[in-house]
Length: 461
Length: 162
Image (tube, rainbow over all chains, first blue to last red):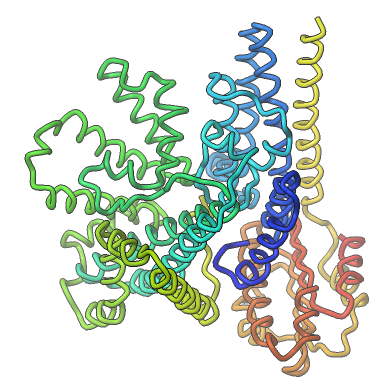
């Protein structure tokens, strides 16, 4: 089930809220687990078995590793860690990468359908297993707390990837306040607005532009810009909805996006884009490999391993690997070649260059092969049929309003101004806030009803 | 000694869970192997289990219109669609000529089902209920989509003939 559907907004969510707040505190977590399983099974219950397996297997794995460490059987603990991690990764590899790995060798091989959210919940359980092994958190002995950690529906299918050590306490004790619930509702609505009224509109614009066979230079740029903005508003909208929903149920998750298109460098970009995934790779791959504590040569290798894996995580294909390495190379250039010279460049130029690098990178996401990506990049820099034509003008003017709105919303000052306005205290502030939320919700529902269903781009990862 | 025994039990439980998953996935994948039943036999079995009163056979032009597919691309293709615009009965049986056609059929059926649901949403309660209860079964080299008063009977025939 997706958050931007009528079933979710008018059936699942109201029922979930009513049930959750009606039942006594002791069984609130159990209700959330059951709701999460229904949420996941909606539409295709056949994949539920993988989620249930992941919960049972890693719950036992965590207890096993902790017990072996307690008994000072360190080698056995390491073997248990390796066994658990390999089994988790094998499941992910079977569903996500078997087509990529075997498809070339055996053309008749068809990969099994990719279960929704498998990359996210596998990384969630791996975070737990590593936290237990490295003693950053105690093994969870309460099965319901662990099951909730893995299956909690707001974050289940598309993150954010919450690390176990950061959420352990909240799995047991949560504060439910009207203020917190209200914050959650507002954040959820912000996300819904981003998805329905910006991302989906820009998505339609991108599809139309991408389908044009003979693109002019400006049209190719427009296509890239539409897709880059769509991807940001789609995924950050989903994250806002997930974090907002979690907040309604008393959880506090860190933000997953922080105006990435206002970053002034690629390292800064990755501190702002899909923050939870960046933290995951930092904590569970980069630092265990040695992080910054090793020589320059090893650091370069570590970074490229991380970026190779980041690309591979996004999808089983050479375009995604290429995209990961592309980002890795820019980060290496920034870290080792540019150094402090970069700070002498005016900030506005640094931001512009970062946005350009990031936008060109997304071309690898929407093109099926590296050759197609290279061809598209060629269109941007003079390889197109011309510079401008009537169709280019049509597509630009047809989508100028959502385009301008999206660009304005990418600027951090817009969010600050909105929060200042919406955060006005007292009765007047509350009335303004409620009215704005109702109007926003009505527009979003109208948007959902009037258009065909549009899935979230990150679901496929 | 007890502590070690406890750990051993946990390890055992952990791998038993993994073994159960592997067995289920293997069983599923075996159940997904190609059927050797000829298309004519499968078609006869499925059609005999369905109430065809409100359905008519579609020609290739109608297949293109309703599903956007070319029936000639497939090893076997039968589509029955409602005799009137007020009907939601439908039966599609396809035999793939290669495994890559699975996704195409799945998407086409989903799109058709979505269109039908939208057509009846708000005024056709019976038709909507029928579409909600419809069955899509894609396995091995066959795909079945049935929207009918008793879709389970049709699927049962499909199961036993597969």
